[in-house]
Length: 200
Length: 294
Image 1 (spheres, each protein chain N blue to C red):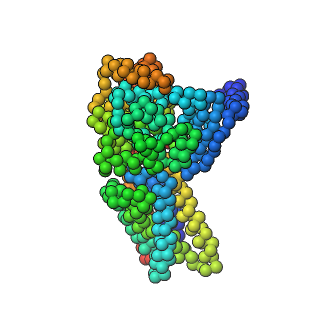
Image 2: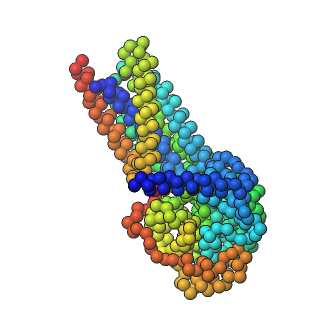
Image 3: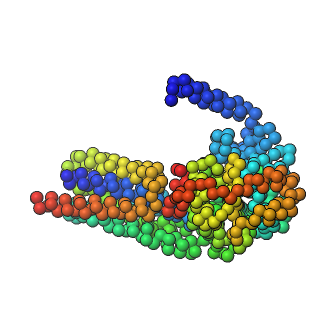
């Protein structure tokens, strides 16, 4: 049960990151356009944030890792996404006025809005590996399975968002709903995690 | 579907494919290029030199007549010149989407004193327009290589105003999503002079028709809707002119537009104000603009 929840968190987090990345292009377009460098900036920031997130997640997993802590990370990632909905207009208009070159304008905007939530989401994968590995001989196998679930989630988030969600819903509605789902998963697994401790 | 119609459909498809194949035979490709945004193909066929962004022969971005370079090959460019019936002598003009530069070249011939700013996202298209379509940058004709929406937002900041704005930006399959939204049209309205005119080139057959119409109406109110293959939307910031005023303007411009193959007997009957779209169609916004999926 607990292992499935770890996988669920990793898979959902993968979904979340890619759905937000895809929508971020739409969020930046009104101010910075659809030029190739806008996408270049977005992908750079997401990759950079994830890479630093992996580093931090690995460090965090050393001291008393638990499903409950992983659930809290998921919730913090969701909370740190709220400025994307609440503040994006103000941030984008401000940066547009401040920075003339749309390359750096989109890069800075992407950093302000998306770096923190993506970095926090990045901590989830290595942390999850730590929770799942019980036997070092099987660590590669477990890590492979975890990457599979998380990247499969990313693929699902990409195709569902770009093919279907944008056809029916507004960008903000999609982001709010995903934040809500993160909260539910986080709440459920932290409760389940506590039960597990009691059982022990 | 019955078996016979199935077979017929296969033969029909095959027939079309062969027709396309043989259609390519009389076509001379002058230039192909994979730019940052698309494939660009320049070719000559009969008396026409054209540019297209896809391998499909049907979607041509721009064409000129080789023997008579003044003559406008496309009906949509003629319909866009119908914007002059709403305002005879625009002094400042903005064209979003350069293509071969045909519109800019034509308008600068008709109105030599007009200042024309063009915006094109793809530097390769600008080069091709200069090299193959006689597009010239002059003291009165400028090009900005950037996204149209970004240009307009900057224009608002600088307080620039245009008497005529032409929207003609297409990527390989349709108008980019962020150039179809209510917010964008409001930004366009902000850079229009009080009596300014907007001419937008779109498709008439697409499923977007209802959404696009509702979006334009939400920002500009009534508009002229010219449909002939393509669809051209004509808007005037201070309200559409009456029919007699339109006819009067058309008469005054008749001689000037004639060399380009544009006449009022062709254009005037196309001016329609019928609201022939679904009223409940959802308005396109920056939050909701799945244009390329509709």
